[in-house]
Amino acid sequence: MTDTWFLHGSGPRAREDWHQLHAQAGTWTTSWSDHHGFHQERFPTEPPATTHLWAWAKRRWIRVRIDHGRWWAAQLTEHDDVDSPLWPNSSPLHTRPDITEFRNWGEHDREVRQYRGTPGVRGRTDMLQLVPQRRTTAVFIGDTATTDSRTAHGPSPLHR
Image 1 (tube, helix red, strand yellow):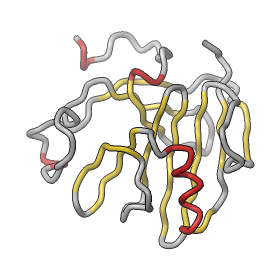
Image 2: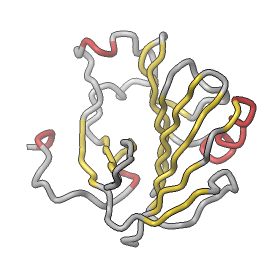
Image 3: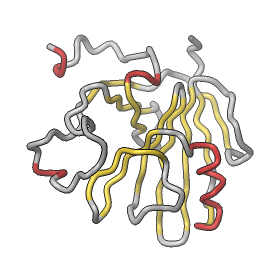
């Protein structure tokens, strides 16, 4: 396992370029919320009606900002191996991101009453939040299968 982490940026892209992002992340697990409720499924073929989505695969995490006819994406990797010219802006991180576990909203949490996806998604306790240590940063989301790394904060309160 490498200790080198990289942050890659797509720059602003037109809605018509979504297929480039889908070509890389089409099989990845993805989360977002829209007027239909909370989703956790494969990467969508078209930009959903939301402002943000998060996708993940082994040692890779993507965060996308969607705004009208444009989108911007950032990819966090545990290595510098990227599959696509989609990421022209790349920089190494000087420290490992903070990585903490969290729980998806549960069956009886009021935030996601409209979830109609795959059973077992609500209340998942194997979710991760990854936060690169930079002045301008954003949160990436994944699950525990995507990395063995964790930030040493003691045992997660979810697993006590």
